[in-house]
Image (cartoon, rainbow, N blue to C red; front, side, top):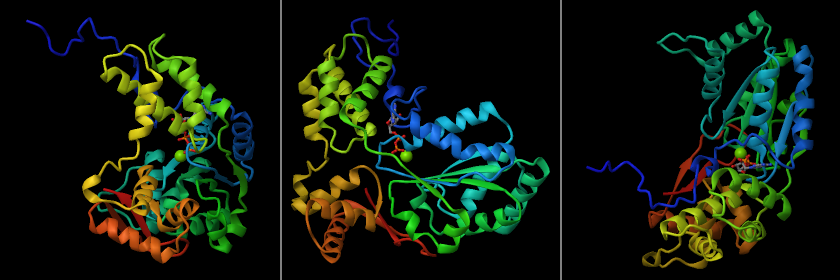
Length: 350
Ligand SMILES: Nc1ncnc2c1ncn2[C@@H]1O[C@H](COP(=O)(O)OP(=O)(O)O)[C@@H](O)[C@H]1O
Ligand SMILES: [Mg+2]
């Protein structure tokens, strides 16, 4: 009897290791980001000697390697020294002050009473830990625009006035975010700014080559294919580039081929926006919104910005299109509690 889990001998998989092509894979080596990696390390270094670190505000477009770089540095920091506790928080996933504290407590491995603690009690525990162990926290707030209020930053900056407790690295795609922070927070944290630029074509090619070599079977792709992917990526995003390679590889495998052809790539790019929704009869404006939201959820401000780059419309008009799409059940929106810094609504595809 055959075991149906066993791969049949005739299969000729193109993808050797799919994980390597997935978005949260952190590669061992990051290409073309030496200056940025060094810059982050230099900003953090003083905290290892109990000095005041440069708080960093990192911004740059999606797919420019921000998350990968900070992850890489945190890993290196962890193996180099135990003088600091690095804590990574994705603010979209942990949008409240409490959620961020909980992440810190988790990394401190502190037990919490089951009855739960109030925010200030939790914060007191964090302070106690820093004092007792003389270990400041390197708090990395990725997707900083997901934070629902700047209260957290306020508390953290106040705490630093008495004793160094936190080094902060804030990361976002939105470079205007810093200017929207509460001015007291800004003046007390004194962020230095670091910009991640879009990757250039030849840099994307190098990144693709490295990834393809690890993830794909030898001979299953050509240099010409990778070059074409790098050339066609619109926004210098390594994420988009790798995703296209992955989708083209899947497509080729499904068609029973042993090699990814240019045609596979073209098919993938063609079908990419999921606006094959003829039954909805979407207008160009609605399609554009669907396309923009394909990369993930967005606040109205980000959405307006991207939309008006392609089609000039007023905010009010764009809001109407959003309402239409919501009525059709294609997108959903969520009101965020607005305690300060940002717009209160986020949109996503359903
Ligand atoms: N310099 C690089 N070298 C290799 N892979 C990279 C590099 N920069 C980004 N990537 C890859 O591109 C994808 C997106 O990178 P990410 O760090 O998540 O970008 P961002 O956080 O700026 O949106 C990830 O899969 C990452 O592994
Ligand atoms: Mg990121």
